[in-house]
Image (cartoon, rainbow, N blue to C red; front, side, top):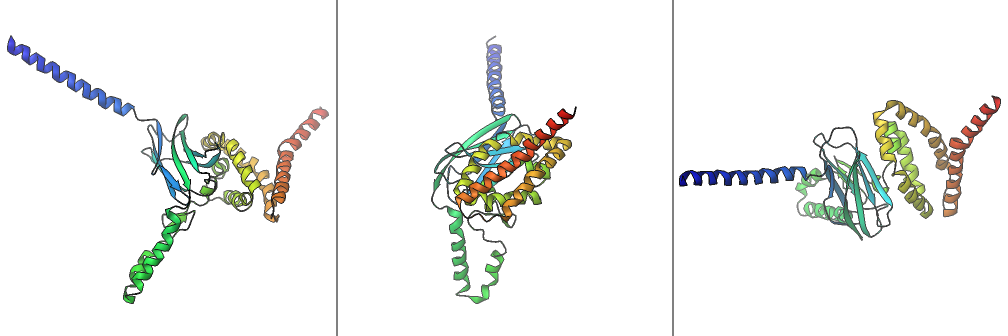
Length: 305
């Protein structure tokens, strides 16, 4: 009896231990967030590359990942939307410049459909590591070439990759990202025309970066506009990709807006007052095209009846 009692005690102990281990494994697997996002560093200076990475737990390809960066004043300063890898992992890189200029704590929000999460990083201003890298590379190349001319071939191998300046990073052999660092892209138009490299998207980007953001009033307008626009545009962009008919309708709707913005290409804007004048004029023109003219047409049709 004593032997059997000890045997039963051992079996009971092993059962308790195995149950505890399986429970901990089960708990750890279920503690993974539905969607997550992280930064490679806790703080950044001007010109630093910010690597954002994360994971979608149950990725089914139905939605795209949407990332918003919000400055200490609560304004959206960057937005991006893309599909994660087939295993649910994703990553993207931006540069701490452009609209990322206020010193303080920035919030990075990520969303996949109804699931969302966030993290934070600190922006300290100053100058980061990216701009200072180029002069160091040049000086190293000179020191190699000076004592031994026969070794010119070695620096030439390194020079096959371009040295990216401030506001850009090296990706797939090309300097990219500078455009995104100025405030993100137009998600609705990108989904409608199919690519960030579409002529219409490049046109909108040029108007924003080369005209609107060159003045303080234009920058203030973009800050307020981004806060409003990015509150609903990710959902509309996702619906465009799911519904081709809606996508074509949005593309047709954007045509008058793109046509009106071409006027800014012929405007010589050199002051804040000119920016305000042209900007208000474009806004009133679009209000007339999208609201006043349709209202007049509807009223005339009703009067005929």
